[in-house]
Amino acid sequence: MATTRGYLLPALAGGDELEAVSLTEIDRRMEDDTYTPTLTASGGTPAIGASGFLTGWWSRIGLDMDVWIDINLAGAGVSLVGTSWRVSLPKQADLTRHSAGILAADSDAIGTSFWASGTAAQSLLTTCILSAAAELIFYASASSTSRGSGDFTTSGRIKAHVRYKVAASEFS
Image (cartoon, rainbow, N blue to C red; front, side, top):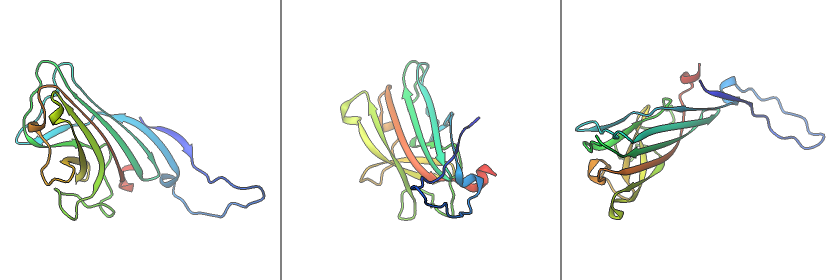
């Protein structure tokens, strides 16, 4: 269950009056929570391993959503399969404000990630692209190639931070 932090009101200087503003409850609310992202890929589903983990948490003010994702691949059972790794987002993006798809001029970059693998040559920064209403895909910075199993040995870590506008229907 999301934690509601309260309403955000502007600070006023002494003697100033608050101007009447029509804000919906959604616009004024600040919330945060954790979620369990889903990791998928084209050509197979990666497995994080027995001692690996996949965690996510989010915070929103109004319809502005910040999401942090931490993927740790470790231990027995790590399966590095598939290309174009994708991670689910906790809430659907507002597709009237964002464009989704594969890397193209009309797809929104919503954040960045850092990938660290068992070899220094495989550590890299990526751009997170909104690939669907509630999913992101990783692309190497300044590259048209999406990231996947070829970017890891059997141990590795991905940390991502993304920001996007949430569909109002997620909170109605």
